[in-house]
Length: 127
Image 1 (cartoon, helix red, strand yellow):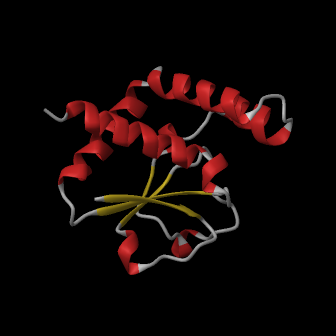
Image 2: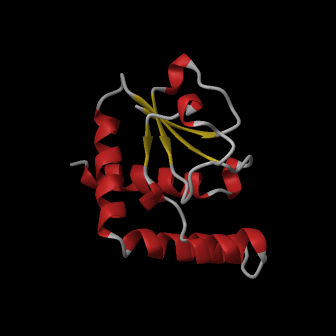
């Protein structure tokens, strides 16, 4: 499996595989019939407060955002369950997963942190 990262504004491609929206809120500008994702896991998105502190008010920098986001994930049993579930796809090279959200720059987006957590969990499970 390959975990890909994309913005919502990027179109679906055949090699995207299973597309997962990981935002706290559903995009208002996309009609239900035009959704370009297969599942929506808001448990893999930052909390409203964390999102505000980083994106809206710039109270925290990327490193603080990353640290707080990982804490939020680790404190949420559903988030951990989803990370574990996603890591199981690593064993099947025929399945791709694409994590999508609003951000254009994947390097400064929680998608990259989720991908890192999934890969880290997968590697820790290997003999």
